[in-house]
Amino acid sequence: MSRAAYDDIAGWYDEALRSGPLGRFQDLAISIVLDLVGEVEGRRVCDLACGQGILSRRLARLGAVVTGVDISRGMLDLARRYERDEPQGVDYVRGDARSLPQIHDEAFEGLVCNLALMDIPDLEAALRTVARVLRPGGWFVFSITHPCFPTPSLGWTSRVDDELEPEIPDYFAEGFWRRDNPEGVRGKVGSYHRTMGTYVNALARAGLSIEHLDEPRATGDLAERIPGYLEVPPFLVARCKRDLALVET
Ligand SMILES: C[S@@+](CC[C@H](N)C(=O)[O-])C[C@H]1O[C@@H](n2cnc3c(N)ncnc32)[C@H](O)[C@@H]1O
Image (cartoon, rainbow, N blue to C red):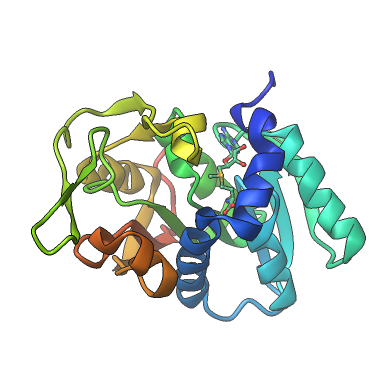
């Protein structure tokens, strides 16, 4: 595995989670992910693309036996440092979600992937991995930036009352894009835009059935900063179930 995109911004990302606006996005996404995850006491759970381990630690505090996986050495160094400072029994493994030979089949009862599928170039391969490492009937909860709204040309126009209204062109422009703002995470590392249909069809092909979808409105600080997210959801959060038998592809 070569150098990963997040190696270059690991320290910045960690700081932005703790004190920047990114932290508010994360708080909202993680609270909904945890609602959809439910009871995890004693369960074997994988946090795929775990980054610096923010969600791994939350799950471990709830009693889960957590393995965090990420491709970025820089992000894993931070995750392991948090684990050293406050041990919670999280095991961190370096691996690529597109194949993950380090993890055996049906290793987990549940798997989370928070705000990261948009960072992975091959969605189909990543979802095949998810299905493979989950036991039959196991759950998969993920959050992504909403596929319909923060599209490659998302902009915000001011209305007469000074509120911001989203402009949403280029929904069909799937592929890699990078936001103009170099101060934000998507300006720094870019993102893979996919339509809703691409996500839903890839889940179905991987043997992951959608049980519940959540499209939250922004709240609190995030809503104050970006009022447009009171009108369109910043995220899509889903709970899926691994089919009992997987179809060989
Ligand atoms: C936006 S960060 C989210 C991190 C974490 N889930 C969180 O909630 O803070 C995306 C993460 O995906 C990881 N990532 C990108 N491609 C990956 C891949 N192919 N396999 C595993 N992790 C990957 C990055 O290294 C980065 O840590």
